[in-house]
Length: 221
Image 1 (cartoon, helix red, strand yellow):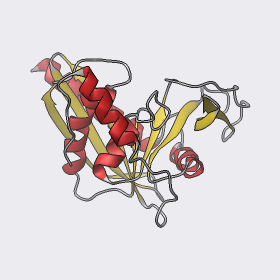
Image 2 (cartoon, helix red, strand yellow):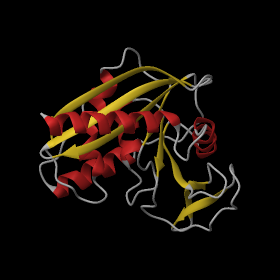
Image 3 (cartoon, rainbow, N blue to C red):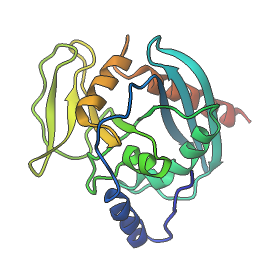
């Protein structure tokens, strides 16, 4: 799994547009059992990425992996996948087995060019992916009811690109969008199933915790 990296912003846009044409929002093949959560963060000149495997039935962690690399792409809104993606792909490759679905802390098709990091990773890896973001990048929505499990459509130019999902009673909703090889309904249901006790899905929470620990360790060195 390797990610094509641009040398200019014009090239970056062209790569995204080409990848967006390859995104397929189709039903999952079979029932998912093993879910990965991925996350990345930055410290100084380094990118820190983590990937974890979770058993969907028990919500228990089966394995975890990480990768630390020099950051090679600048921060540009809408192009996060080029900054985080290579390290995340390396962390995923270090897991003992591939997951059935990857949950990403970021966007799927709810993106200006329909190619957020979840969609980008999904196309490159050939694995179903779901974007699960804490905040909106694009689109308009009506606030969903306050109860867990309720949602409203996230609309971009009149097209539904995600769901604004309430994962706990009276907490801020998450912005769920399909990435690749999964439908919106499946993505929404999977995220809700993985939100056991907290606002965020357990695989993403675990990956986030691992990234924070790795950052602290790097800072101490």
